[in-house]
Image (tube, rainbow, N blue to C red; front, side):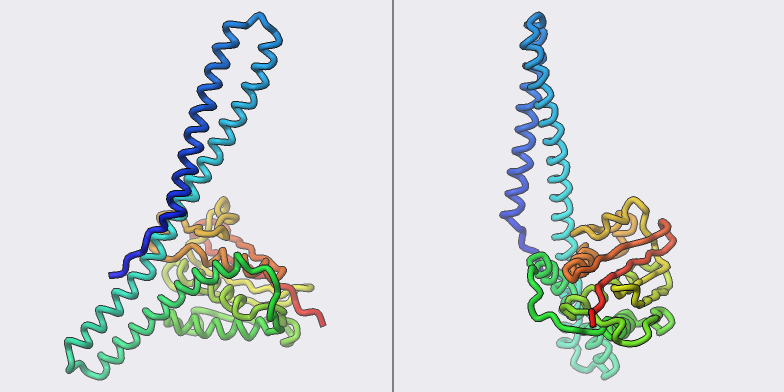
Length: 309
């Protein structure tokens, strides 16, 4: 059984911050009440009223800001706790599955070759899931610390997209028609990009994984690649659960997860689309999402600058 170790320092820090804001709010409220009483006693003294009004306005502003910061801190704390729970689940589940199959193989020496092969295949898929989760967390740490453009090279986004499509089809056992790839460029020069090929590969795989996970029922994903002006555009569309318009700008935030009714059916770390946009912006591009609403699918566009000849 694998247990996630609690992150003591960040948790204590958040609790101290929340406690500070609560105490500050209580003190500010007490000062505001005391100041109101002072106004009643010295209501004839105009100077005191003006001065009191100024201080009262400052205190009210402080209480308002304090409330805003407190709410943000509480939300951040909830997101952090949710992230820990999600990562723990994503790590524990495949490990428990692998252990179960290994114990079965150990205790049943006379299993047939076909059954053994099936067990091995399931364990390989579980290790891929483990590796994917670990890579997501490591990539999130790397991209937030990346500043320079060390070891950037020229690569073909069309080639990376094609390889990622094939890998996604294999990983999710999809027929070719379930995940279509359309390259609208004239030649490879139109889709050449300068950057970190592995980072961009991670972004493309996250787009495809996201489209498959949030498909509603049968999977039908389309990836369209085209050169537009000075950019290369990769649009990944699905016919899945869709995104409410009010959530479109939030889905690229770190630790963001879909609404609860959807989140309960889809597991993840909340880092996938955060990595997509972070990697795109690190390369001078961006990522955007479009959806007509819940149940109407989603299109996410990855934009990267083309290589200048």
